Image (cartoon, rainbow over all chains, first blue to last red; front, top):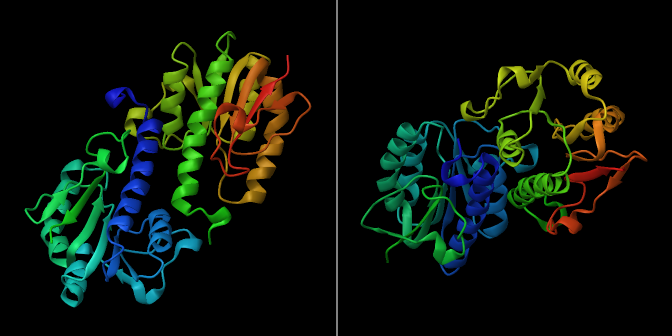
Length: 172
Length: 172
C-alpha cells in the first residue's frame, strides 16, 4: 500500500512541497527573461495563485477545459484559453513561439499511461514555446535534447519521491 | 487574495503538513492507551492511510456518508460507519464511550459557519467518546472544559496559519 514506506499523506505533502520548490526555482532562474508564464491545467487554482504571486509582473496565461477554480483564484477572462489542450496550446503557440519564460504543466489525470502520453505529445510544443533559458515545471517527464533536466536535489527538494515532479531548463 | 502574505499553495502546504504533525503528535501521546481510533470524514483516504500506518495495532473506525476514497485507501467494511455524522457518531458512541484513544475529524465543507456549527455539535460527543488522556485532532476549534488545547508550536508545527488545525488532549 505504501510506496517507499511513505503514507499517502506523506507522498502528497512531498508533491505539493515539490510544486512550490520547483516553481520558486523556475522564478529564480528566469528573472532576467522577458515573456509570459503558462499555467497548463488550472484545477482548483492553488498553483495559479502561487504563479501570479511569484510572477507578478508577467501575464499568466491559463489553459483548461473549464474554469473550476476557487473563487479567489479565477484568472482574468482575457488570460484564459478554454478547451482541449490539443487545440488551445497550438493556437497560443502560434502567437508566442520562443517567447514563454516559464511553463507549469500539472496534467496528470490518474492514469499513468494517458498522462505520460499527453506529456510526450506536449513536450515538443513546450520546447517550441519556451524562450532560450526558459523553464518547464510539471508532473510528467518531458525528454527532449533541448531540455536540460535540473535534478530536484539541486534546488533543495531533497524529500521528493522519484518521478513526482520535474524541472527543466531550455538550453540557450 | 493572500491571507497573511501566503499564497493558496503555501497555505495548503501548511495545512497538510499540519495534519501530519498533529496526527503524529497524537500517536506519540497515546501510545500507552488502549482503544480505537476514529476517522471522522474519509474523503480521498489520505489521512486514513496515515492513521492506519501510525496506529497499525488499533482498529480505525471510519465515518462518512459514502466511501469515495482512492482504491488503495478503502477501509475494511466492518470498520466503516456509513451515513450522516448526526446518526452514525451517536450510534458508535453508545458502544465505546470513554474508550476511544484518538479522534481525527477533518469535517470542514467550505462554509465556515456550517463547519463551525458542526464542530460545536460534535464536541461534547467527542469528549464523551475519548478515553482520559486521549487526543482529538481536527480542522475545527472544539472548546470544552475537559479538553486541554495543545499549542501547535509545542509539537513543532511552527509554520501553521492560525485556525487551520487543532490538537486537544482529554484531561485525565
